[in-house]
Amino acid sequence: MTKRAHNFCAGPAALPTAVLEKAQAEMLNWQDRGVSVMEMSHRHASFMELAAQCEANLRELMQIPANYKVIFMQGGATAQFSLLPMNLLAGKTQADYIDTGIWSTKAIKAMAPYGSANIIASSQTGEYLTVPQQHELNISPDSAFVHYCPNETIGGLAFDYIPDTGDVPLIADMSSVILSEPIDVSKFAMIYAGAQKNIGPAGITLLIVRDDLLGKSRFDTPPIFDYQKQWENDSMLNTPPTYSWYLASLVFEWLLANGGLEAMAKVNHAKAAALYAAIDNSQLYSNKVNKANRSIMNVTFTLADEALNSTFLQEAEANDLLNLKGHRSVGGMRASIYNAVPMESIQALISFMQDFEARYWNK
Image (cartoon, rainbow, N blue to C red; front, side):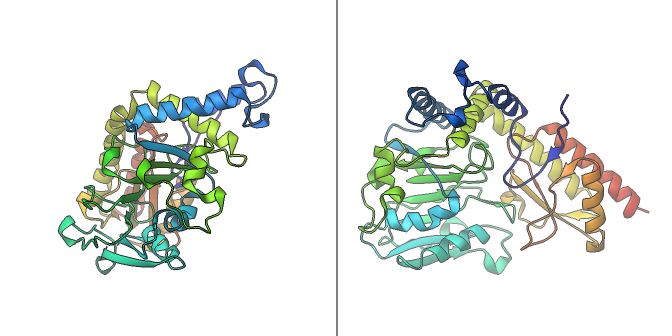
């Protein structure tokens, strides 16, 4: 059996073993055609059929209403920080933003060339340990949209509610939380997500856009970045990242075969609950995020003695517990426990953490 480590990488993240095995089996000979899927034209009828089935499976998984378009683009979620105002300002000069961490801040900064980013609420003064509440959101009726990040990957901070923005379109960067549990798509005007967490490998970006938002791009928006034009061309205005698309299709099939998002939510909440309980019951480890706003995808924690950090990481890696180092901007540790990370990996991490504490702290 091929060795598989416990991979807690924030992205590119772990992929389901079953998906990788199927991709491996089909690598040289996809659909008995004697070529790899990555060697085929994206215009070939077989790949077009794959793309159509991929969208159909996603719609089933997320219960996407008929008046929402599904678009696959390149450039990652970071590109969308700029493409949002290019496509959605629609003649307006302002958009509202909720600031809850580094990714929110990047989106805010990217707005500058196109208009004013109005920060309607921020968690900065509270060190990004909680999210602004609904009554704190001072939404402007003249704004083109309200943007927020439901799950901040770096800080492990998550919203415990969906903001009510009235008639102003709500835009969500769901890169690190999409497909982790069911959501009501109809409460959003647009959802976007980089693939490399729960969708597939890096290289493709998913957009779910309500159809009334299309066709409003700036006059100088390049066609390749125009949501309307991408949708009209089946996300194939230029050559798409076909292999990333193919692997995303396998992930969607895997999710459906394993009970869909309802089943995934049960597993994800159980994984997170077990890991947070181990942290909370420890003298060495701690998580300062408001409990109601703790992420179920990105569990951050610090050691009471930072001098132990390097030893912790070295020993963790020696035990096949990989990519636990926190983001360079915040330090500490981070275990990203996306859909493909099994409960067995959580249990292995908890056992290691408890053993490490017993040897270095509980003396």
